[in-house]
Every structure is written in structure tokens, then in C-alpha cells.
Image (cartoon, rainbow, N blue to C red):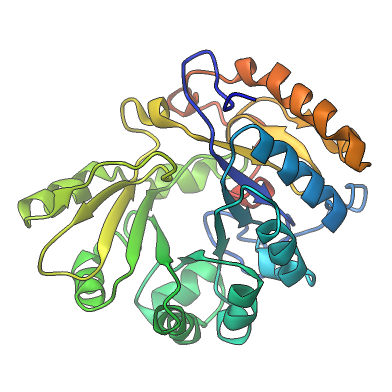
Length: 327
């Protein structure tokens, strides 16, 4: 079958699969009151359902998979999920986004299962700020886990930092020092409006363009984007081992290079993080002989994907918070 493509010519080799909506942190921009389970919600996909889902997507050209949450390590069978995903023919890059709370204890176990890329949320290099943003004084332990991943020669190690005005938007000098000797990428992400964070968004949203200007003035050079890359615009500098990426969803033509689809923990296909609907796929994941039906179901829906999101209009779709869909 030809690679999955929409009516705008965009192809989708990259799938983000949430395995659980729960999170053990209380980040101010996502779940400031902590996670509260919905007692009426469906259970998350099983290992067998995940395997069938991934086989269907690889038939359609997916080869990069990112496991997300909530916080994926909250799920007790995460290692088995990684092993299951790594065993699916066609999955060549197995990544995960995590808050790093179990990194020092589980890193080697996850790598043995097939994990070969990791993004760790580190919203500040200042211990007090980190604790204030996340609700946990865990910065030193998490950074130790990042160093362990580098020492273990994890092929791709990146850090995610959500930019918050008057909170952590003045830390570029500290990050530059951190990147001087570490072969790690840091992604600065513009705060995004979701269904339940409008007052916080208005108080703390800051555009990333000013940061990009500082980088260019400091001699950082933009890199060409590879086909299965995430949404960041990447920069490098000859004096630094690490790289910097900018994720600016409010910038012009941000969605023109979209190459990823999302599936929620309960099996709903989301064509956009901020879309107005989810497409239930779970009915096609109950038996091995349903893969063809799954592929056709996905193919029939892809042209419903919009050319762009509607964040500029304040429309956030059905995403109440980033943990609900995996960010």
C-alpha cells in the first residue's frame, strides 16, 4: 500500500501513541491540580490491541513511533509495551516522551526492550523553578537520568522545556552552558492554549521568535529538517555539543510540515492535537484478521485532516489538557 497521505500532500511516517492519560506530576501548564481519573472512562489499550494497531500503521508507511502519556511510566507494563512495539516489523525508531521520574531506575530496562530515543521534560534548570512548575523537587534526579542515557549512548536524547513568560523565559544562558559539552538537544516549546488553561495561557504565553533571534545573533545556524522529524526548527553551533530546537505552533505555516498522527490511550485516532473529533479504532483491534479493516478505516478518514489548527482563533478542539492526548 502507498504511504498514508492527506489531500494536501502531507505524508505521515510518524505516530504518537498515548498509553495512559494519567500523570504523576502536577505541571502548572497541564495538570495543576493533578490527574483525576474518570471512573466511566474506557480502559487503555491492551498489549495485543497495541500490536495490531501498530501493524496496521506500519502497513501504511509508519516507521517512527513515539510512546506518550500522560506519563507513560505510570503504566506498569510499559516495558512490555516497548518490547511489543519494537517487535513490530517496520518500526525503526522507537521513542518515548517522559517526565523522567523513573529514568534512573528503568532506563536500561527500557533500552533493552528496544527504546532508542527519549525526550525528557525539563522545564527549568533552576531547582526551585522546576519544583514550582512540576510540583516535585526532582530536578537533580532527572538530570542524573539524562546523563545516564548519554553515558549509555542512547541514539537520541532530547529535553523539552515549555516556555513560560516571567517564569523560565530568561534561562537561555544556563541552557547554553548545559549544552556546551552534552550531545543532547533541548526543545523550547511555546505554551499552547488548551480547553482548560485560558487564564494561565494569557498570563504566561510568550512567542519563541525572540529566542530564535537571540540564537541567530549568537551564531547558531538553522538545520535542514529530515522527513520523519518532529515539529521543531533545529539549530546548531560549532562551539556547542548540543543542539536547540524551537517548537512554535503559533508561527506562520507551522502545520505545513505536519507528518504525524496521534492515537489516544483508548484507541481513538486524532488527526490533529487540537482537532474537533476522534475516530474510534478499537473495534478493528480485536483480532489479528482485522488488520485490513483497520487500514481501510484509517485511509477513509485521513482526508478529514485540516490544513492547519485553529489556535489563532482560540479554538482548541476536544483537548482539555495536553495529558489527555499526549501533547
